[in-house]
Image (tube, rainbow, N blue to C red):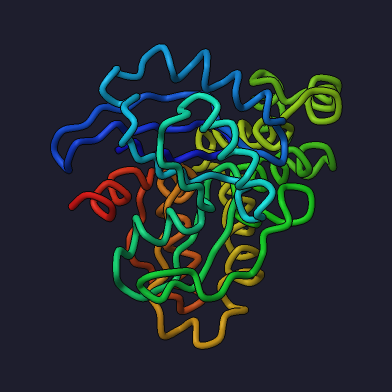
Length: 280
């Protein structure tokens, strides 16, 4: 079996025989909202196929793909078609990355599962499937608490002259400069991934009071706009998967405590949980 966990920045492909015998291949992230079918095929042909063992190309191979941007049937079909072009004999299923987070975090248990990575999302999970979801509107209109949201908030504070002079100078040395940012955000592909790159700067300077305040405000926005809109949200544990939740776990837990929200698991990546779900 091949299990794929794909975000907008990175995709992990796990070739697994069982829970203990597997190998991982990493490729560029895939998101059908930002990439065409041809773009996706190019990633698979150049970054994945050359490293796939021949045994994994067998007719009986099952591929279970979970990916960002796969919330609509036509987007799932685009990704499935690209995968089948590269693995014509495989049994392929494509699911939303939100279901991946729920299965990885909760297994067969009920709860609220969240993604906080380049983008963000959340759902109520009944132990088998997603039963309630407040849709994410992407990095321009939503993705509260995500890497793109934190990065955009940090850049906005800099652009508005809200940061202390010394902090602004430090950020400028790290590439926070108007013309560079405008070019990358408006002229180059995958602006969400570019904005999320500034979350690494937020992590670097997280002990600075202004940066800490920006990050915590982003998490307050996430809880307000996502979690607290679910009925009976206080009766569930809220678990997270994603690099932002993992690296900013202290700030995330602090904000959750202030809002009386119970935090469950926090995982950097869902692939181990998905392996357990499918094979153990």
